[in-house]
Length: 65
Image (cartoon, rainbow, N blue to C red):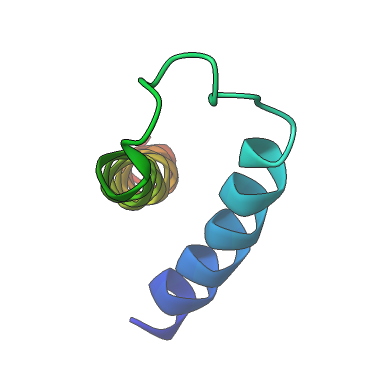
């Protein structure tokens, strides 16, 4: 369980770092800051969850080979 926690921390740093390179302000309508922030947050959380579980599943499947 601690390995998964540290993996979450590493993936969170990577996702935040990668989001910094994307200019998504052009996608959203003007004066919709709250909706854009919520979308950005949910996108980040889902990306962190998916990448972490993918890496954990990959490591677990390699163990059994």
